[in-house]
Length: 418
Image 1 (cartoon, rainbow, N blue to C red):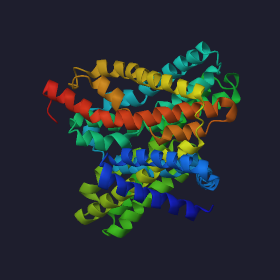
Image 2: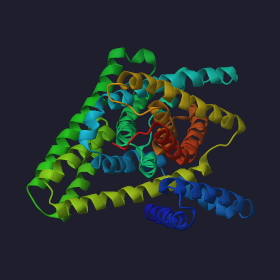
Image 3: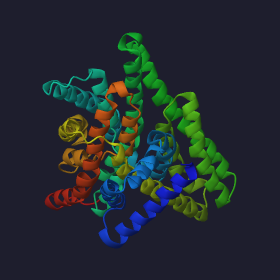
Image 4: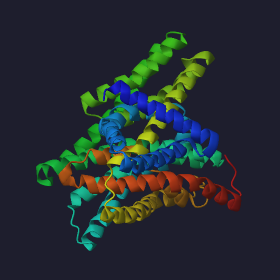
């Protein structure tokens, strides 16, 4: 199946599912699309039992899509840039301390907690998995997805300082999480003896510092180009070229593309409106990236729903997945406890910030993409099933209940929305 036909089918499905959700279900956009996609996939299974041709064609479609490449090398950069473009630096500056700790130390602690607990869980069930592979799973499931929860928090009228923490953390921990995963993946491939602590530290620094530097330099160059002209068509094209150029350069230079794109997006989004863009240009840039954001999110969450076709629903894997949901939530709660306690009084956190951020830390497509990148000997099939179950629970159950939880906390505490 050629690429045009694949994109056509996915776009038609996304548009159809979006119409059904908007007209009838009226659920949050991404959650509604994914639920409909899962129901559609189950229907394909049922119809496939009567007519195998239907199931064969559906499997052909899904197996024709390299989900890992599509998300990590194509979609992720556009989605992160669209989110970062509308993230205000003043709000991030006020919350920079906790956001930095959440997105770095928090991800590392969560990785080791999840990896260690899963390792002993497998041991308890006499299902031995190497500890390094459990750490790989911890790294891929620790990053949270800013996309699904942002709209829900706005609908819940969540305080801005809480929204900034959750979205700010998610924008940066995607990049950090991928870097941690890459480091552990290389250790798993080459063996711990072949890499010293200095090698690991250098690789981490190169990815993170290199990504931030690339984002700043590329963002500044794009800003200078846009400042020199006043033509909205050209300036929209420059932002598009910026994202694509950063993605290609990051891959070539072996630095973190997600971090570079986030940094460039924040730089452009905060610097350009006041200096480089006319009101007309800003309106067109905003609308263009909002459309890109909506379209790619629709395709992504439909893809997540359709991925059910390739996930093994072995009963043992499902049991581990249920335990994995509890372990991932518990580990996130513990990982966030330190930064929350440290900044609680200084930044006047709302009550139960840790609980809300734990429940609002929704996992998404990046975790599935990383699970798909595992090699067969790393427990790929097992960890893919566990990851899929955690992501589905996270998006549907946590996504639909985080709004009521925020409203309940706000009403009880009398917190305003500042």
